[in-house]
Length: 279
Image (cartoon, one colour):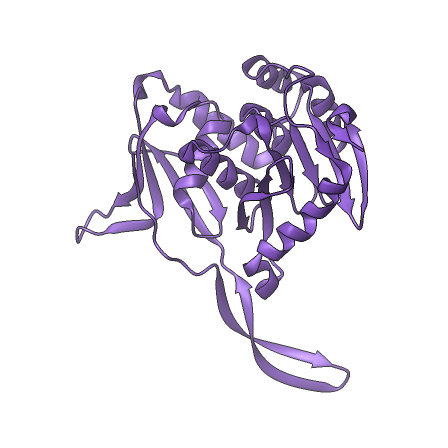
């Protein structure tokens, strides 16, 4: 499958007026880049994500995976920037996905669902039931068992890999870890859901990572949609440096997932699936 990767800076410099006590100085500051990405399927627009440029192919693949449009790498024929209407170049903020079976896509449902999710969030028992019907609960023996001391070392490891955050302080991060604590992949983005979609897209496109044997770690809080995305990708173990929401906890429990929150400073709260956390 053809993949196009273009070196892109994740940060931009702007002037800023700094005030400290009575002193005022004009300086330059590094900021996280935010630009819109239009995702197309078979040349039809289906979503616009406000994202940090880079790894756009992974973002599109992860988005389509968690929306149920694709399930395997083989479902995607190609992902590439859309061709410009004039000049023969490419549109850097438009990515087009070609599918093996485009006739199977319900474009009306996909567009309607994306609009609903972006405007008010997934909500209601009917919507949650539909998600769980598409992605049944995991078996108790599914997923990795991870020692507590290994879990405790994951946040510092993720932080060291957040190069753009260290410069800007303005990006979320998501990472996939092996059960022994090795960081397999990490992505940064202005949107926490985008960061998750990027690592899940990497998981799908690379084909080299077993989703049943990873821990998904996010740098901030974890809401329902992140736990739902993990379930669609067959990831049983989710950890967050900050707090989960009540719906995220309820969904993880009903889906057979492990959910760890406040994973920092050697402490953690285990909200669901404690059997997967070892001594």
